[in-house]
Image (cartoon, rainbow, N blue to C red; front, side):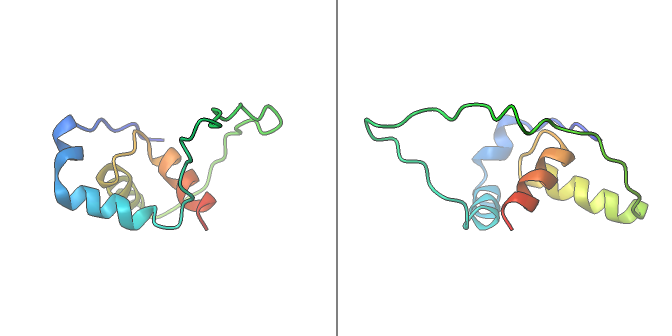
Amino acid sequence: MSFNTVSVDTFQKNDNKEQMKKAFDNTPSIDLSNNFELPKANHKDKKQTFSFTMLPNSKKKLDKLAKDQGFKSTSLFLEELINSL
């Protein structure tokens, strides 16, 4: 698992904003009306550690995609990607 840091300037670039928009076009929007409630943690789903193999070039590409999209970790990016399918 890789933890990547992203500078604040990265989020201000229009290219990255467009990439984020494309990546999350299918995600539902959050209603911030008066009835808005913060989601509660789902204690039924605990995170588990999984190991799998991939080619080094594929790992580099996955790390770059996660970093370019502003994620702190590749695993969080992969989780969000899979959940959006």
